[in-house]
Image (cartoon, rainbow, N blue to C red; front, top):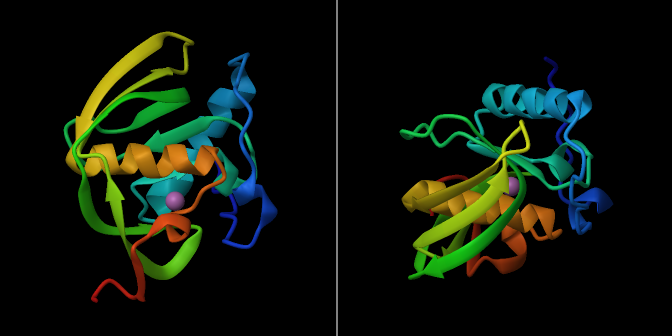
Length: 155
Ligand code: CO
């Protein structure tokens, strides 16, 4: 496994609409491993492939809830319900936090690293995290949609 460089806001790769992954090979599995290591070493709860310079549709998430590490390839949010505003940050936008409205509950379909179709229903922090990371795959950052932004965790 390897720690990857995290691209910061202003890097054009973060603005790209990412490509679907049509063949899950060893390179993709290694990328997922490296993304997880990069996330854990950076104290993040999620990271999307464009954040490490790869504009393809892969995400890793670990919100330290019951699910543990989740790898999502070609994720599609198929259901959204409710709306909650809460504070978000991003490894690509250091030291900036913002208030972002997200659906309260979602369902997402994706492929796992073996190419098997998975369904996940999420609420709370995990639902927020999935929506934030899926936005990265559309070239969208939380600072683009936040109701307000502030420096540091405290408002
Ligand atoms: Co982010």
